[in-house]
Amino acid sequence: MVMQLILASTSQARQAVLRAAGIIPAQLWPPATDEAAVVEAANRASIAVGGSALTAAETVQLLAKAKAEDVAERHRDQLRQQRFTGVILGGDSMFLLDGELLGKPLVPEVALERAKQHRGKTGVLYSGHWVVVVENGEIITGGGLVDSATVRLCDDVTDEELAAYVASGEPLQLAGGFAIDGLAGAFIDRIEGSHSCVMGLSLPALRRLLIGLGLNYTALWQQNSN
Image (cartoon, rainbow, N blue to C red):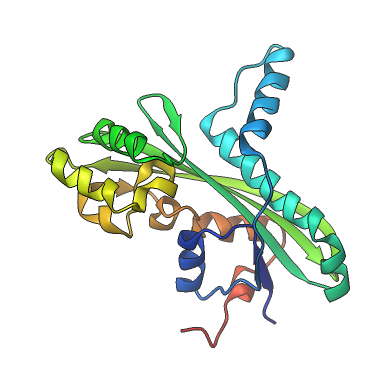
């Protein structure tokens, strides 16, 4: 029996990863999560009890959970009406370079600065995943898992090449400011870890996460997908 998946995102990269793996989201429901506020509140709460600020892994996991749970809660009535059975998947990715955790650059100036900073260096791309399990429209349980991969940018990439890449607009909405499956593919010297993790959704992590929740990953496959 095919198990349905709702993606708590409209990310083209995550959709591409899923579709290439034979998983076609039943719905694309974007979250209404204030990411900065969520992270700030968590850091403040941790520091207030003598703890430290969130690590990179904790940050992406927190945000993936917040997104999946936000979508599940806001669409609770619709899930019940449809008697939906399946999972809601939330994800978040951030890039750690030189000890700094980087999200989407958003503007060309920041994207170019980060690309030059990354040149010839290795950073770590963290991808957080959170699954909300729904049965007959009712939320049953949830769980999360983080994966990471190292990414090295070639040291011989020129300023002109980086400027052309930024001018394309591709890196502005991407964690770390690059896409291994896009125009920057020729600039990436090597990766260590899951290729899909670098694209923002680790398929090995998703599989392990579902198994840990007692679910069958292969039930997500759409046998008639192209």
